[in-house]
Image 1 (spheres, rainbow, N blue to C red):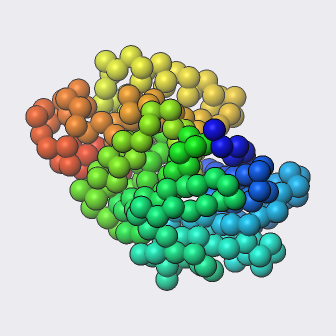
Image 2 (cartoon, helix red, strand yellow; image 1 turned 180 degrees about the vertical axis):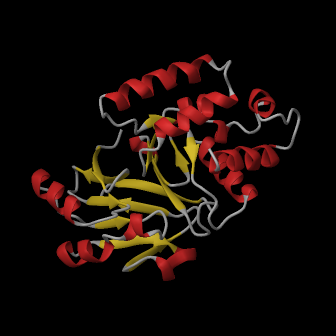
Length: 256
């Protein structure tokens, strides 16, 4: 397995920035830097030199540190080809099916529109790591600011198909609220109920709930389970089309 060290940098109120370091080459990336200073501070503590900035989408709480980090380190900015005009300082444009090499560790890029029209995700298969931005949260998914339910459902299906031992690194600590919503839809899901308890315990100790295994998300995240009959029944739509069920789950979460 590839050696990819991953460090979490909490910033703002509930954002997670991720530092990725390939020990073999020294290459280091930051994923979705909302702000620069905490990233530069952590890089200094670790003795790492930033080589790349990986953006999943254009929102300022994911790209706000791009230009300052680029100026301070000379790092190259990687972002979505379809949204290049909204990615500050972009140098490398990528899209669905492309491969990006961080030192000796390769990432596969997926187009995952829904939250925004140009959202992408980075999957490092040898490191069993998925950086999903705001497409997939622990027990949740991003709001549909620019996309449709059909787009987001198909984006989630793309991510759901990855190996179950993939660790999902999302960009926000929304898990406790997501858990409170999810338990309303599948009260008979024992694995979900156990997870809700664990999440409450972790947050009570101010511990992070991210990352989590994709297999666990598939078993408990209602947004990944819109084609599962127990979830359909949970929203009063037995036998309904998964896209319609997903849209209803998203609508309910938006006002939760």
